[in-house]
Image 1 (cartoon, rainbow, N blue to C red):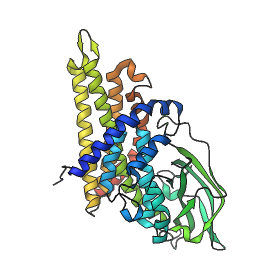
Image 2 (image 1 turned 90 degrees about the vertical axis):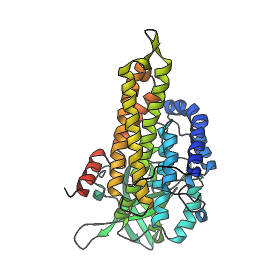
Image 3 (image 1 turned 90 degrees about the horizontal axis):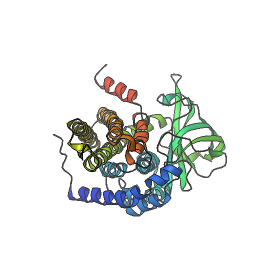
Image 4 (image 1 turned 60 degrees about the horizontal axis):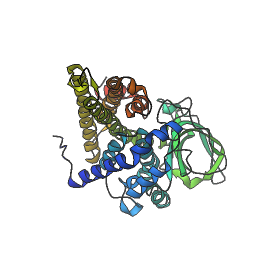
Length: 383
């Protein structure tokens, strides 16, 4: 039976991050969203709190926590600012986690203290212009030449890849051909800056305006042969494992967004008056907000369950897919309803719910679309 009770340490972490989100993140969220600026001061604050090192051992500069601890922090941050939450999520689960899971001891010693401290960000270069959900369609190549990997190709929609503190991109590339004729895909660490590596102009996105997202190009990028991450030919399989874990983190972020919409709607429904009484006294509106709360609670239970199985060393692929599916849809549905609750004010960008409305759509797309989650769940049922 799933035990959803949190320890005193976990409750204290939630409280600390909630206060940081309310007092530090929320006051600057609108300005960063409006101006489309990366919140370096907020990232520094998260680094000082040790959030980038939450799930890593102390020997690598981490906080000695676990993946569930990271998820709790992401939920609290996403209640007020999804851009900030995804910066942390991508920096940890996509930037540092591949090095921790699959890197050599030398690679861990070189990169993890830098990434877990938050002094630097790492990025996860998987998606390409023609290879999204079909990551096996990778066209970026890497060949060995004089003890170096020579990388050519491009990546798309890569988070944390063009900031002033980005220091590492882990890229998947075709390094050969398998016996059966398929592509041998490996993972290679590319330090930033490196000659031939370019982060293109930032995307003009619908939402997540304060999150850093760029296309990447590799033009005869040369890195030492020892920059291979994990076994040769295991890059795609290893990144699938990273994506499975990342779906739990994205689900936690989505729950935070869904809950943030509830919080804002409850407050607005109590304060806003129409026809001589608070609008929350109207049953139709009260029931709409009640349904929003039910979505958030159900989605939270789903990601708690997936995280519990991950930490217990049990299979968790199906549970991660369910959590990502349920939580992503809860965030989008709640954002839509919260905007309706706020009426005309919900259409104004300075209101939090309008940002959640724009931001939440990507939660049904990134790190595996809704359709991919349904496919994974169906497969788990033998269909």
